Image 1 (cartoon, rainbow, N blue to C red):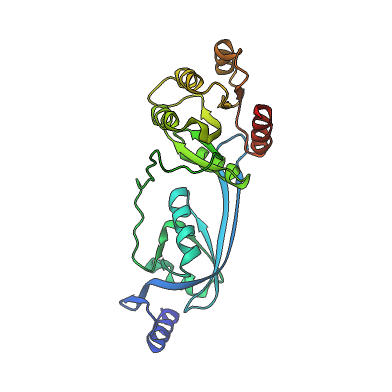
Image 2: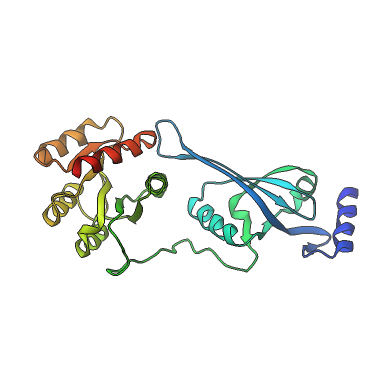
Length: 261
């Protein structure tokens, strides 16, 4: 308590923009210095392993914030904000305030960081595409309802220089694909797509453009699914069946697109 009281007096003396309740700081304004972000895939899983920390300056001195939590969309949104706005707010609970003040490295859930400008993150916020959205023909269409999996696939695709369009259901993807099928280099689809059977989705895509490469993610050692698709699409050179493994995905995409040229 003595340390907390002294620090509180220090905050008041310096006139910082820290919210105080009963001399317990709730929100700290910090300034971004440097980010360290690394993402890999967990073994035998689509779950990503994320190592994310940011170096900041605060009234309590320089610190490294180790950002935990599994909210990928919030993390992505926050990184976008920090890239443009260097100051943000960290919410610290009363019982951890002394720990934060004294620590050089501090673990905190990513959702405890907030923009200074009051911008609020909306969970269901999504970008709607229309027929005039796409320019060029350097897109890869991803169809999957699993956000973690699409996030990983999207990272690989973007690093390769392609742009991505993502849909959670086969119907949404099909309706959009019909508008401009020549915009896509290939399609990556999970073997179970919502709102329509995956084999029907593939058949409809082939009717529109039988040359566009389609990679069906069959999952790990899923021989039943693999054999089912083979029996229906073995005559189509553009349909490719294999599990999407993150470390091999770039090579897989390169090989499939090259064969289609």
